[in-house]
Image (cartoon, rainbow, N blue to C red; front, side, top):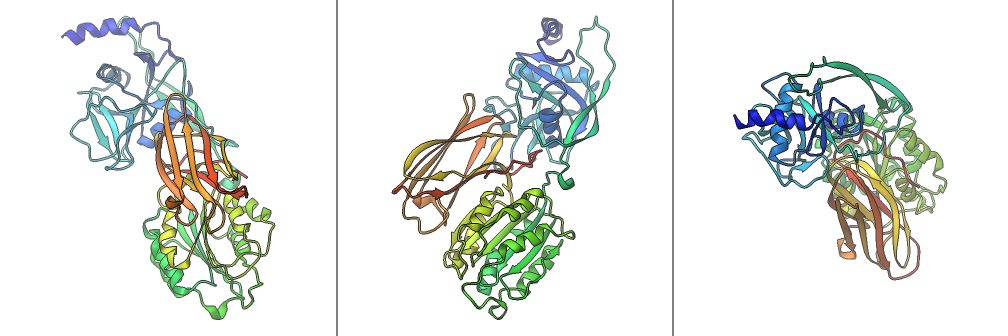
Amino acid sequence: MILQLFLPLVLASFAHSACLDSRDKEIKGLCFTFVSQQLTFNDARNWCHYQNPVTSSYLAYVPDQYTSSFLASDARTAFETNSGSFWIGLSRNSSSSPFAWDNGSPVTYTNFGTQLGQNYLAQSVVNTKWNAFGENDKNLFVCSYSPVAPPTFSPPSISTTQQIPITFAPPLVSTTQKITPVISTTQRMPVTEENSCKPTENGTILFAFSNDYGAQTVKKAWDGYPFKVTPCSGYAIARFDVRVEESIVYFTDFGDAQSYVYSHLPDSKLGFRDKKAGSDALQMVEKFYNSNKIPICGSIVLILLKRYPNDWDISKTVSLVRQHHGIVHALCSADPSGGTQSKAIHSLTSKTNGLYNIGKGRDFHNLIDWFPMYSYKHPIYCANPVLSGQKIIELPPMNVPFSTYYEVYVTVQDHIPISSFVSMDLIMKNDNYSGGNFQVYSKDVSGILASHSNHFSPVTYSMQLQYEYKNWAEEDTQVRVYSDRLPPYWLPYCD
């Protein structure tokens, strides 16, 4: 009874809303948009971020019981229902991960119900409790934003548009006001047009290996990566550095791909017989991206390199990879079998948002597991700083699309042995949100690569790199951040 008497007074106190749209509801300085459309959690979050016609926003932030109670009450009016649930912006990556708010705020208040087996939370309009749903479940949803400082997100690449109908809930009004009917409007959603290639969760994986390796090295490398459970549309297999060029073969079934790898392992009788001969790895990559039979949009290439190319000009290869929004990773042998251009493939990975590592063939089954192809495979940041001596430098800022955990990678040089590297400290800062830092010492490096998991909020971070080498020789390095969630835009490539 007390709540029933108190609620009209509260509603009246917010009659002169500071929100950017009169249909939005202000609660304790935040504005809430009620969307009468059933979407999955990820689609609802993306709608709040990129398709809210009023302003960019988050999936609803519920910081306290006061907000929770009034959201439930407002939702019953806005959605014209006395049952069901609506998405709020609290989720986790897995059952073993902590819950995190979409806007990156710390989780200081919770109102959990009894249903917590899934990873995406929705609030009940009946009892205000938060219960968990699966990634394919659909609910109504609520967005939130600060009217004085709405969030900003990195825009997707735009070249054409398609029309998506969006339905809004009516504005919340007192009982003396006339309720406006539900409004249907249209919001433009950006779509990538380049080769009809839009950001994709499951692109093709190209597993390409030099015939110069021993058969067991390649087999153990293939077995060392969880290709069977890696989300992808298919597997392309290429054996290169053979005297008679072979076809790149594509499979949609893992078992068929594995059988092909096992039956086409390196064979010394087929390979080059001259150490001066350069690898045809670059030509193999170009052949893959020129294919009209294999899905190549958003593909990920992994090269096991034994022999260096003799070609120093990689511009054509880079252009093809970028045209189809691909990524090239490479694992190079510490004991190359020939060729002259030791930096060519490293440069290719640097210019295609990929990573480069070096190691002994006997260690490939372990080193291959470091590459981001399984979960954290979507790049959101790249930089290729050239380092020497001891300095502190500023890197380009990082725009983070989601509030979640990310995998941060660095390569400390492009060759072995690691004799001059001492330490590296990547510092990620934002005035309002913690980014932390990533310290790397020589003992932390596997090959030339190190990685670390960080939680970031959907804001812009400054990136500072403090490093020390024992001499002033220039070292080509790579800094990468990858997400396990698909961003709605392609990350621009860095040179």
